[in-house]
Amino acid sequence: MSNKQFNILFLCTGNSARSIMAEALVTTMGHGLLKGYSAGSNPNGVVNPFAIEQVKKTGYPTDNLRSKSWDEFAGPDAPHMDFIITVCDNAAGEVCPIWPGHPSSAHWGFQDPAAVEGTDEEKRAAFERIFKQIMARVNAFVSLPHNILEKHSIHQEIQKIGATPVAG
Image: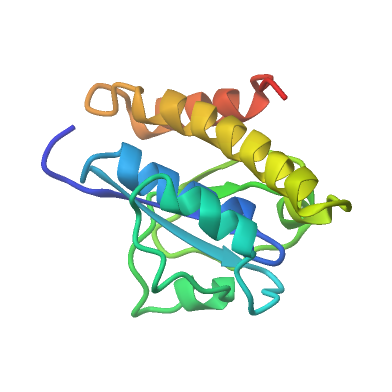
């Protein structure tokens, strides 16, 4: 890649778990070439504490993590997005805003760890499992040779990543 930094927006409905973890992973694994953001179509206003536990493992700062609306990224003052990736089936099926610059988009579906009921250890295990699944897909994404791929090819590759099975 050239010196250009690529921005990736991860979308989910509540913006409390999967999209937050993906934001942290792509930013830390992208080593300055990729910057992750996250938002929700219907943000619940709170980042799940089990997601924060997982994010802390990456070294990504957690102080500014917040559950926010995707409307923040559709306005003229928002950062330009190169990629939009939905991480939950609900967000993938919703009508998204028109994103400035027409970024490439894909769906990388993951089960919702916040929906797991049980003990804290069972919930923590679910978050860790989904975190590892997101990490596997982010690893595939950051390994793409971005500097030689055309935008159309990148679009096809990120859709393929979303279709690959993840252990779990």
